[in-house]
Length: 179
Image 1 (tube, rainbow, N blue to C red):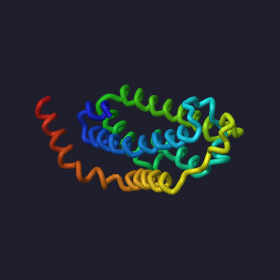
Image 2 (image 1 turned 90 degrees about the vertical axis):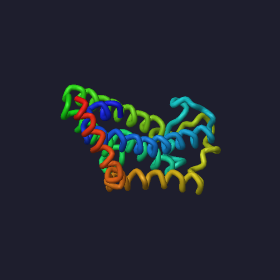
Image 3 (image 1 turned 30 degrees about the vertical axis):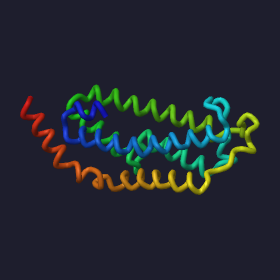
Image 4 (image 1 turned 180 degrees about the vertical axis):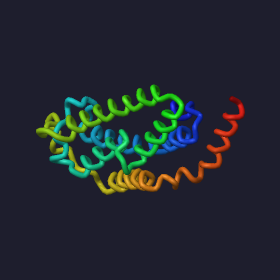
């Protein structure tokens, strides 16, 4: 977000604003997922989880989707924000853009590692298997709403970009006048 704003380009600032909105949706989903797991097992250690998909398939779907959206899976709002930010930054300083893209790649590697450890593998949740109920109706409604918004904004980014366009144009114009 900071890189996008300080690129002082339309794409960079659009991307930064879009990424803040996207981050609000996706991070909310991930925090709710972590809360669901903690509520059922009362452990914060990744090593205490494995094979959750075998008991909680709906949860696994939401967790994997949210993790991938968080690292910029195309078709999600995370992709749009990161792409616009990187394009805007690339116009000004390609080295900073490459460093930022490297951060995105490392984030993706960590997220995939996390999904592998928690979701897949042999089932192991420190003898809490009986407590591991899949998402209830309330959790499903909340999480699926966040997922749908993440996809809608990823497929139709103009729902966010059009309303902010004139303000961003004015900001970029004023920044150009100051330089």
